[in-house]
Figure 1 (cartoon, rainbow, N blue to C red):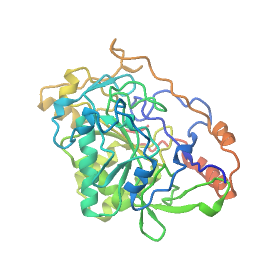
Figure 2 (cartoon, rainbow, N blue to C red):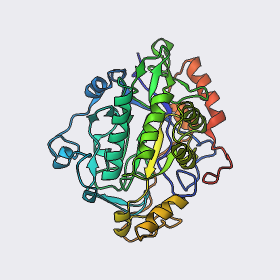
Figure 3 (cartoon, rainbow, N blue to C red):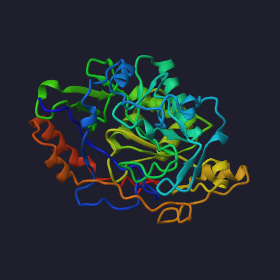
Figure 4 (spheres, rainbow, N blue to C red):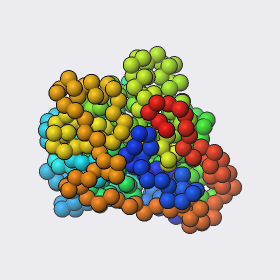
Length: 378
């Protein structure tokens, strides 16, 4: 049997601009999405016991690796370390990170994506602490599932594989909470794209339908996580990049549970579908903290009125990154991630059974960025 692979559309991480995740246009006319062969996910599928899956797939690490448990930074507790420990400098596409702290490999209700490099799990204290608190809140309210967290930044920021952002500790990719069709939690070990009905499939061997596992969006847990993060006063969420139909389903869930109007309004404001659809994960970006702005941190647009007011109360004005990224001499060159068009990646994926082909054909309908007419999206 062929080595297990995943066909997934991966959105590149962030491009500054009023609403898009990346400022540069897609590299090819059909590159509103990219297909990735995730051979690193060849190990056991994750299930409700997500920590076991993480252990089975965890890469070996040596004492010199920044992600090694023996590294001093690996001992930090994101819930107790002072915010002053970390400093985000520059923009998300041309910045760096000082004193970044690692996301725990596993915490209450949270685990690191088993197919990702543990050296790319560093962020600001605000971001990492916010993730741990929000995932923990979901676990306390609805135990039995875990949030799978993918890339943040490298320990010192800067270039990171497969991303045009994630360079300054303020970006993170998180997978959706999912359920099996019977209702049991399903903790994904890879990104699984969802259709407008909130359904997807964990494909094993792309040529063999026998190992396909149907899954559905766990809107309740996903909304609970997002709501907890948005309500966290220690972290200011600037953007949540997500496909439009998942956004709509989360808003439906928010209204069903009668979430606070202020949280619903904030979610409505910060969510947009970028040029890459993000139907298999959410890309979350947080604002520069007031302290980091003074150290050279720059935000991309938009700066919402509520953010301007909060900074003004502290006697600070927001600093916008230049239209061509941060032009500070401290910033590195603009990254050029290696991406492929959908046609290229699809050709390289090899034989696929008819259900996979049909899903990829349907996916074209929502892969192109919509123009919903909302103020902060374009």
